Image 1 (cartoon, one colour):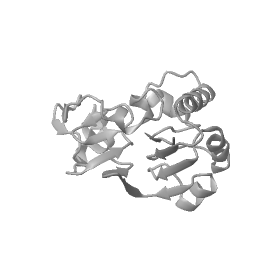
Image 2 (image 1 turned 45 degrees about the vertical axis):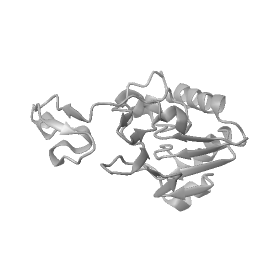
Image 3 (image 1 turned 135 degrees about the vertical axis):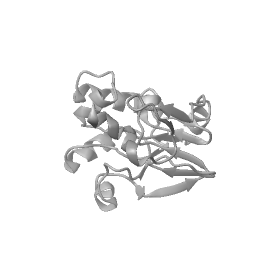
Image 4 (image 1 turned 45 degrees about the horizontal axis):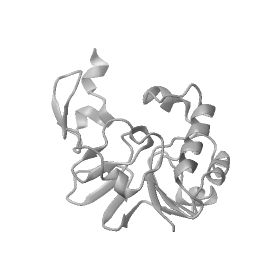
Length: 191
């Protein structure tokens, strides 16, 4: 019986993501090998995987080798900010490529947003797992392993607000803050 999995932000071949997100790998080769092994430990050959963006960095010519090593009959990409054009991602081996998609009442897209819909997203890496019905499916908070919807629904709620460590402002996680682009405080550059 085929199952459905979700993941995001694998960033295969991206050396800096190890440092930026404190990933527990010594090199990109180790990270790539371990994420492929963990994917294949749960995803079977008949399963479907929705990848919610930022699949890989580096040369697009290298990406098909990653996709060929990953289990799953269907690999569907919801494009992230680091992914190439839909045409290039299809040529790389994805079965489908979308900007966003609805799956069983869940909106699938790369960026988290404040919404009254149920949303699966990525983009924020290790920042949080769940705020209400918005769930981050990124590998950094799910043991570098794709997950089924029943597993994702077990995620504890994270605080919907956080304090900026530089300026002390209280910010809502699902709102845009011009002075805090991508979680970076404008005041941090002034210190």
